[in-house]
Amino acid sequence: MQKIARLLFALFALLALQISPLTAQNYSGPVPIQDFHRHHGYDPIYTFGPVAEGDTLAWIRFRGSVTNGPWYTGSNIMSWITGPVTDQSFPANMVFRTGDRMRLTIRDNGNVGVNTFLPEQLFTVSHPDLPVIRFDRSNGGEMDFELYNGAGGNLFFRGGADGFGPGLSNFMVITSAGRVGIGTDAPDYELHTVGNTHTSGDFYGRLHIDDHSAGPEDGPDTYIDEAYFELKQRATLNVTDGIGDLGGLLTLGPGLTSHDHQLFFAENGIFHRHDPGNDAAWSSDWEKLLTPQDLADMGTENFLAKFTADGLGDSQLFDDGTTVGIKTSTPDTNYDLDINGNTKAGGNLDVTGQGHFDGKVTIGTTFTDGDHSLYVAGSAIAEELFIKLESAWPDYVFENEYQLKDLSEVESFIGENGHLPGMTPAAQIQTEGLTLGESAMQQQEKIEELFLYVIELNKKVEKLEMENAELKKKLKGKK
Image (cartoon, rainbow, N blue to C red; front, side, top):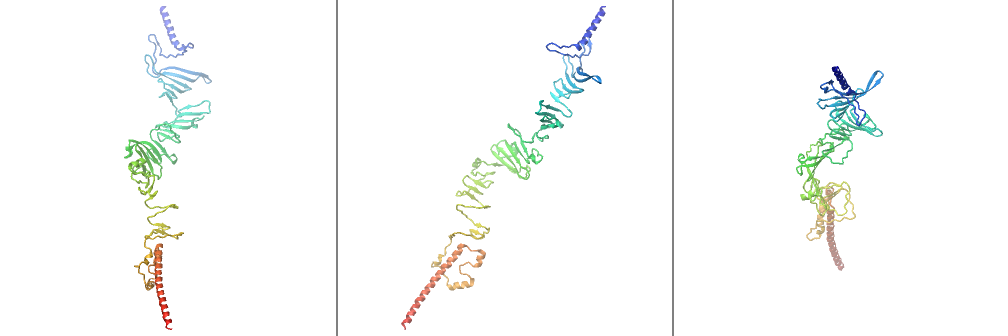
């Protein structure tokens, strides 16, 4: 009888242990708890059998009766052991489903995954077509935004006014290569913007500005049709006259047949070079842009000297603040402008003061044969013309040493040559011309000679008149 009683007690105890985990519920108290206990049977010695990796701990199903079947599961929550079971603990995850599709996973390490059983990060969103995280204001009328993992592993930031999917506009993209694009879905560089850019803080690295309107962008190292500003090693650029290891480099490449230019900002000034072939060969040497202090240190006061250290410079202009020289570094201080070379004026030339010319002057002609100082093509008009000759004026005719030709000699010369002695013949005037001074001298000489002939003739007339008077007197006495 005692054995039967003990057996019945053991059976009731086993039944109580089997039923208790399934029916134990706490619905009241400070912390109401609903427990789900999983084990592998009961043993009088070892009590409950321990769970193992892969066991389902619990499966909560939310079900309802439908027409074509007794029950339909609308959603469920499941948890199972995901790792080794120790004496005191084991890892487990939790999966949330709606219908027959997994929607959310919480792994034993705390990673949360949407649409994935194995989230690799703290929060992972997975979808074969539209892996999107959306930020939507429920009141409407506001901008909506999405994070979208597009084809090729590119991450897009897009938004729009209550739009969705393709209706949104892409604002920024981060490619799988790590490039960031703003205003473009296919950035070619680490940061590629299409549109205006404003930076109010510090900027580090190379600034590359390309002419996007001219077509596809050139590579970041071509220096063609673009502008750069960057920090460069002076030795790398071979700026031998510069001081300091580093300097700012400004590169301007207008493109086409235009020359490319570079400015290097060293500690001791700005250096320039250009590329005449527009191919970034940079075959020209670096030349320093001179400052007034540089010019003073070089011993020149030319404010306009550029590129070279001599007194004049490649500009061929000299300006010391008082006198300007063209093609001369020592302009005459008596003048405001000193030109060492030929000068051509395409417009009018007005001279208010005096004009001085050391060489020949031409008006309306380029003919400069001979030793003349003024060459004029065409007529000239003047209210008064004053001629002052450096050679002797014909007053020498009145000197005692002057040999006045006899009229018979003059007559003979005229007969042989067809012009007066000492006068330029007509044929020579037609071919060579005649200076006004020379003409005046010749005419003055002939006038003075003519007076001498008249005086001599007058003496002969007076002598004849005296002789005639004496003859008349003698003839009258004989009557």
